[in-house]
Length: 396
Length: 143
Image (tube, each protein chain N blue to C red):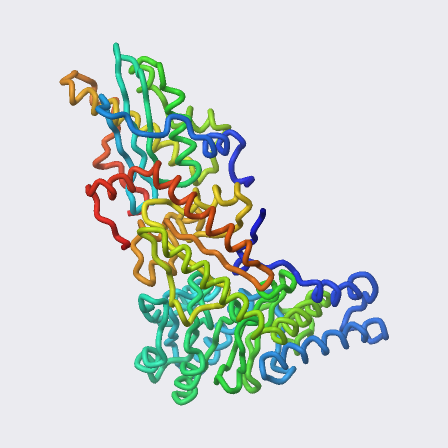
């Protein structure tokens, strides 16, 4: 049996997305900027996609800018707010310690340019409150950027409340909704969101395409100079098939949102309950305010990469926040931000489900994962020391 | 996964000499929990030869594979030869390790040296301190 449980990394494309794209790969080849009918057919497809995405977010089509993905959208949103701030001599930016690197690294770049970046500490359950944001907003704050839901531990942030706080204070509010779009209901107007990033491949759309919602009236900073595409705010011939696929995927995800969420939540909670039975393990993130497909555990005494490799042998595809899988010497900044010690963070496992995962697959995961954890613990000198009382257990 | 050679995967999937030697003649432990890898080597020494060797490892795939390979390479060998085992030799025997994983083979070399040193210390055998890494100052990777 193979179980793809890494949907937070990327998802399989849906039939709907593929079929929507095919005519634009196999037939209509026009450049949307071309005046002739073939070009105009592509331009119409682009407009149709823009309308669909706008409808899913509760905004107007002209407030949607297509980007190469979530990272570009995050970069553009943050640099836009910074540019506006610079003009008003507002150089304070508020964010959180557990944002995606697309946000954190952009903020680091701004810090080097003289901005003051304040990363709010994250509570143990992976949450921050609107009150935390409210208390930290200053006269010179030009941007609050807080993710909609965390990609590793799945906690869902109180975006509406944060949006309200920002609106009252007259501060721009951006949210990285890459993990939320297509999985959680979004209404940018009702939620007082000024800018929002999303990425198609997280909701069964194609890779390499995303969108940035920017409230009308906010002058977008251009990152890629060139032609007049996207009202001059993002040059480069549009990836028409990918854009059409993204719109079809998002529309489908939003149409089935509640049904999918209910299905995934049931599978998720069964997994959480089952994995909680492994001694000296702990769930990361909030048990309730949690993405429907996200399961993230730390298992004491073992290391995440070896866990992933052994699960891979069993056909289970998952991810981990261990240093060895993060490509750096430190384990996941998200797990460290919620207060997990390095040692514990090394032993993390993220399983992220989608609506096509099955009950049988969850049973298989619950059979195999405890076995692999036990196998690795049995060869771990760290585990032996804990069992013998030479070292203390850090997790119950 | 293509990250590792077939050799690494073989030793990772089927690690040789995993376990503990009760009343071992020498025990060496290197690495730390914070960095995410600890290697522990147990030696049984007879006539200045590694009569038996076992390991326990907390760490990634290449850490487990490096321990396994290193134990195979010193089993049955004279201590003088075991002390000559270099991290490079371990990595080469595994058909190479990714650059950021080379330190796993360093740990394997150091764990064996630490176990031999422990054997010398326990038995009051004089030895050349120069042969052993100064573990107090080796600097843990992530601190």
